[in-house]
Image (cartoon, rainbow, N blue to C red; front, side, top):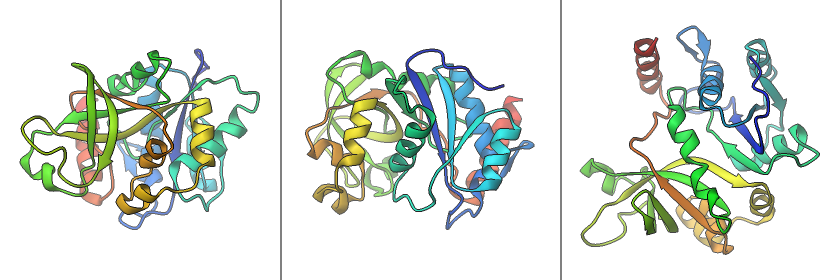
Length: 250
């Protein structure tokens, strides 16, 4: 079941055992498999490259390996997922063969293949350093919810924005759509190397949004517009919903 490297892209999935709202989250059972294995399967369905799960616990390493996927043990004290995937990148691909790194969060067990593939599209532009995803907000409550991160961007096409800012507040002002950011990223390798070498920035710390570090450093982030927000599993209620979704699919 190990997915062979199909080109220049490497999918890295960070899995962290510590979770205040859902302890042991990567190993939570969803339709007979640990959640992290379900995420690896979704990445496999997207068929965009070699898949490596970056873990910080021996039990998660064993679960991933037993399911036939590749796991890399990383330190347990990383402050962010990007730091974890960079450590995994240096261990999984020390020769630098992968030119693009796709960071699929380890709590997206129901994500469809389409959005994972869509994250690569903005990198068709050689000027783009980092690509990510967004969806137009249709729920009025989300527009003022600080837990829903908004992308403020300049339209490049009907399906793409150039990110100017990310914020937890309601923005931009005035008539027009607002966009909900989806935290799935595709980095050029050099961009990821640059990003993790930077210190946390002023706006990053103020908004608690890591991607602002890249914008403040002058890096270019383009954003592909997709149709729906994938379910992130953060609570027991989310877990039950994920189980229902995958049970219905099977």
